[in-house]
Amino acid sequence: MLVVSWNVNGIRACTKKGFLQWLEQRKPDVLLLQETKAWPEQLDPELLSEHGYHCSWAQAEKKGYSGVSTWSLKAPDQVNIGLGVEAFDREGRTVISDHGKLRIFNGYFPNGQRDCGRVPFKLDYYSAMLSATEQARSEGKLVLVSGDWNTAHRAIDLARPKANRKSTGFLPEECAGMDRWFEAGYHDSFRVLHPDQEGAFSWWSFRSGARQRNVGWRIDYHIISDELRPFLTGASIEAERLGSDHCPIAIELDL
Image 1 (spheres, helix red, strand yellow):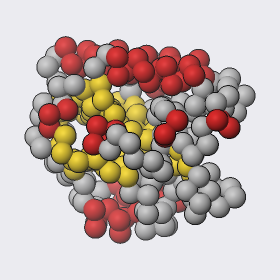
Image 2 (cartoon, rainbow, N blue to C red):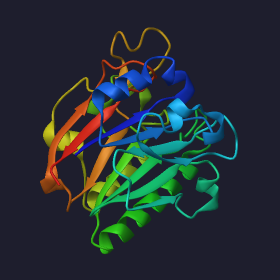
Image 3 (cartoon, helix red, strand yellow):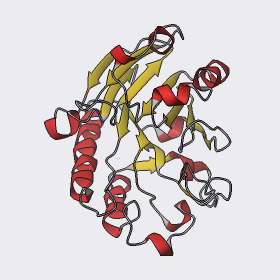
Image 4 (cartoon, rainbow, N blue to C red):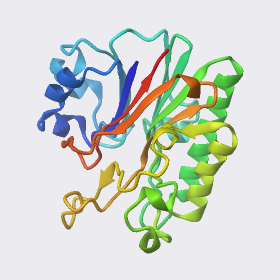
């Protein structure tokens, strides 16, 4: 089972840069998109149905902002939009889908903002998502939490850790927020298979040729529950794929 997550930074903009051609070539079993920045009624049939995927959308109340969407070749057994917390759900941040024993949480985790004003909101979302995934585990589900977490967990996960220690995305409290997940029995799938790989990033600023110089951050993750870890067979970052300031990240599961 191939699952790919990609913050497309606007699904319509990404489509103009070859998104549908990439989809036809890559053909993931499940595709998890973040920051779609669109309501379904704003999209053409080529993005709604002509590709053959079953699509579920969570859109923000504010048009052109946030939004996530889960696409699957086989219809999911069940889909829930949102976490049931109005503050998060009005921003279209979460789609939860069941695929047999696997429950996938597709999340666009909040950005803390340059002035760090939204860091508490971000950490609250981390906690709410963790509560939801723990409930799923108690129900016997294998749990995958994927998306743009907006945090580089460790120094190895960004090009300039010392310069960014006081910047949102690498604040100590944000990294500690991720630590809670690993203490609760979750794993960073990429680091399970590539524990010491440096220069592995999933986001680059549009400024100063950052991508060309690989001055980036790894802020997109497939986080797996301990129960799912034995089924992990692959994890990769598709840094060569253009179309957004993020690149796709992939996980392979033998279920």
